Amino acid sequence: MLTLLQSFILTVLCAPIMTVSTEEAQTQEALVSERMDYYIKYASLDVPWFYLAAIDQYERNIQQVRSDLPAKKGAIAIHIKEDFWVGEMNPESDDQLPLTIAYFGGQGIDGNGDGIANPSDPEDVIATMAAYLETHTFSEKSLQKTLLQYYGKEETVNQIKTIAEIYAQIQTITLDERAFPLPVHQNYSYRGTWGMSRGWGGRRIHEGTDLFASYGVPVKSTSYGVIEVMGWNDYGGWRVGIRDMHNTYHYYAHLSGFNKDYTEGDLVKPGEIIGYVGSSGYGKEGTSGKFPPHLHYGMYKYNGRTEWAFDPYPYLRQWEQQEKSGQN
Ligand SMILES: [Zn+2]
Image (cartoon, rainbow, N blue to C red; front, side, top):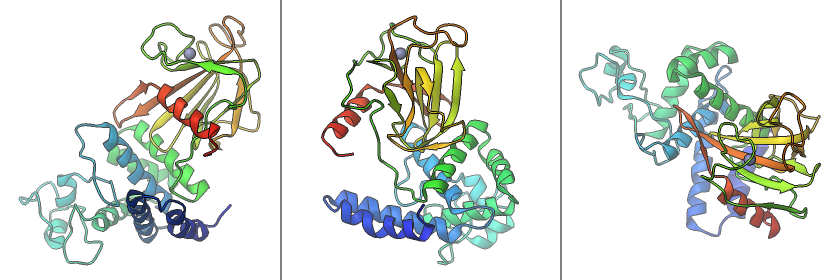
């Protein structure tokens, strides 16, 4: 395991070397290192850097899928509401003076020392979020309570906690690697059947892609993530649910068995074997053989309000091509 400093150096120094091909990639790398600077600068014992990073990533994720939230440009995606920033009773809804903001009970503070508390300045925003959390937090448990108070939804806290756990264990925020869920040298077949009602065992209706393969073919995690469920479900059979850092929940169903090295709460990396292809499900625990063996793979996105299914097929095609061409 790399130390934080080592991975920080890797993130800042090595990543640009590997991706100098486009200007866009360089801009992206510069943003990532600026982000990491802020997280480390404003971390504290009760509010570690990986929680600040997770909150920021969570907000970036929901801005990508919500039309009512503007996607924030720049290093920090966290969007703090006006009232919260200036204080509810503050007559100036765009007040940026630290003194009057504090007087009216607002939380906005001046992080970068330019004399104003500017909600569009990334450093002022991360400083404000860190200070608010720090004031109300005494342990990791109470940090989650503080987040629940701030965001108002258990699912949101769970998603942020998951991202924080991934960052804490991997010690970096650049985790864009992906894997195809089956070994590409094996025999398998799948089609884009999104929207068709026929298929075997989605979490609700048929929401996902069926990848047909023989019993016992290894099933791999497609992303970094934390195992949220691992067990029996009457439709899905032996199934695994993994939540990643992009607010996506990955669902692997009808397995013949699990990789016994893993249990709920564990971190998995892309390409790691989580179980084996089977035909379990459509009955009480242990039911198997009611349909041909296949992996049912589903993807669900959480937007801060609700979770919905989207079509995994184009992603599967992309990951398969990447592995076949040796890019992973
Ligand atoms: Zn299916």
